[in-house]
Image (tube, rainbow, N blue to C red):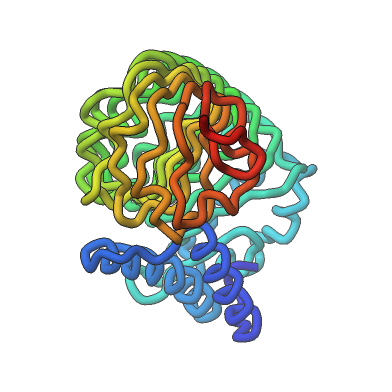
Length: 367
């Protein structure tokens, strides 16, 4: 249960979270990004512990309990996760539920469903939990669409709807939830264009829309995010057109645009003073001169495979010893692979199938 106190579990949770977090987001070097990095990690660490402590001493708010029981009725008797949702017990102790204690004693703040027995559409009663700050539906046979009642959740900070059967367009009204810090809508059959309203969410630091059937261009508004983004993931969709120039203004750590149909120039995404640490442009139709790329100081992971990128590998790329991933295969690159760094330690497959790259293990000798 979310609401039980267990120090050993919390320690294991912290260790697991730290390992996962740092494997995906290596600590940045610049003082400004270090501060943002630290703040976000503290939020991730503190929130679950706070919920565990609060849940043990809170008594469920009667109105919230009534709403939860309506949600249980909506999903029906096959939802095993909800089997201990007994109206005679404290709902703050129910599985998949977390409650506040300090700010709003007994108010439900977390709902996290990951039970395959849950099916059907998302109940509109979700919007009747005014203190909800985390809502997750993961790996469920959900159908229909996201209900507009979710916009009543003015304290919602994290919304995760992943690996469901929800379909149709991503609703533009999600842009009304100004409190959102993280929005993840992964591996659903959502289709249509990405709503531009998401670009105006003032507090968002993570946006993940990968693995859908989204089409059309990346919204120009995505250059308008007010806070530095930890992650923008639009991979594995059917997005097309050129990247809006506004994206070059983003302060972003990880950018994944792979496996789409995007075209044109991506050179403006790079730059010495950008906080970019990881970028994947893999499997698109980008065409730009790679020799003009200036590596961001913190960039350690780069994948531009399966594009139409031409030019040569910049000399400074060979002098950098911090690469964790470097894949430029299946492009139109030419010239000598720079010496001095880690580039030649990577598999030949990371540079293979170019026009005339040479002087690296598995590649021809330069003439």
